[in-house]
Image (cartoon, rainbow, N blue to C red; front, side, top):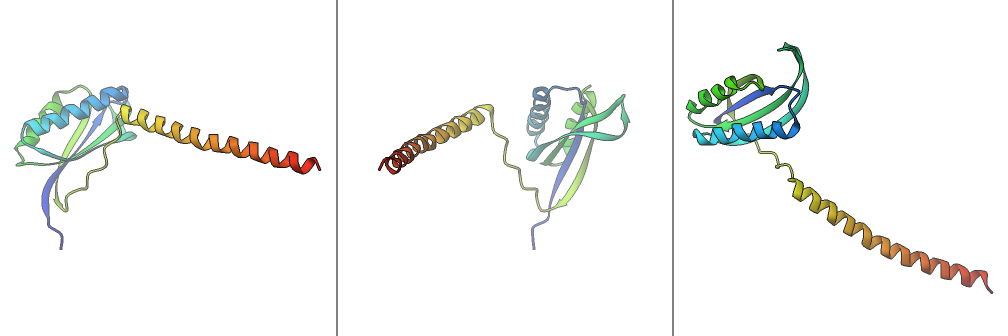
Length: 149
């Protein structure tokens, strides 16, 4: 039987007209605030832009963010107050969960890691091409030998 633990999930909706880097700034801001007030972040995910069930502040879409965290419960009021005061947060809701803790998602790669991967892919592509060029030369040599008796 798995161990049942208590944790919280906070879902908040950001305005859809916010730039992508500003969205990540908001996510980082709330994650840091949560840790500062004594909470422990289990998982934080941006769920993307989705259509709302009804219009909120003249917006038909919103950027959803899900935050799973643990703590004594006192930290929730502090993070929700920060969300309430922010003009960029349209709605938020925290739900108490009981059950196995959520498994954290693998963190997304930083821009430097992405560039490094692309460089490695290019290096990998260049080495097989060199082999292919030499193979083509060999094929042409064999063709010339068969053409000239």
